[in-house]
Image 1 (cartoon, rainbow, N blue to C red):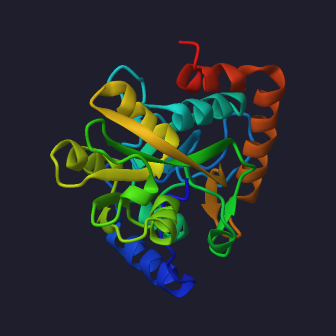
Image 2: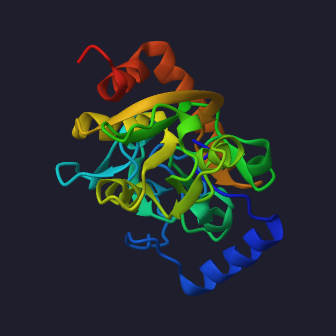
Length: 275
């Protein structure tokens, strides 16, 4: 998902400086600075030795969710995939909850808040100006979620309606371009976007199809009425010009997981239609 807005690089740098001074935390515990080498001896410049600290905008099911049954307190497709990659590198994973806007702008990464971002972030040319991406790991669509009795059948029926979007996302961009006459209402994340639809504050949600599909499965009073092919691909994100050895290692292990079938097992756990 292109879950996020365009922020000028200069602003990103300023935000990064602010975050660094403030010891910025998005909700998780701030990782402790220690050694940077992996157990195998490779130096990836990690902010906590032996652990990949990944920033993520939680919740964003099924990619990043709180999970009290998980040893690290989080699960989801992004988290499980990164954990599998880290295991191959003899590393652990810690999740730092962070607002997506500071991730997509590169600010949190430049500030050293985390080693990388694992947050269903769409690879775009604009973001590449401030961020280095891994190879793509997931292909996505946009979609329109409404209440089953809303009478809304497609994007052409949104004129005069309140349509919820996550601020700075590709869903918001798509809605701006195609939802003619709609009143777009911005929300910080899906954790407030979904309850807003349930509470009647908005008439529809336009965002990534996998996330809307989770809501459709959870409550039969809501349904996806349309999907939109936008050629979006998610990638793990790294601070521009930094963590190159880590990015290379992540790419190598991502390919290995795809080659040996482990990627498919993780993918099917969250997206298989045969369940």
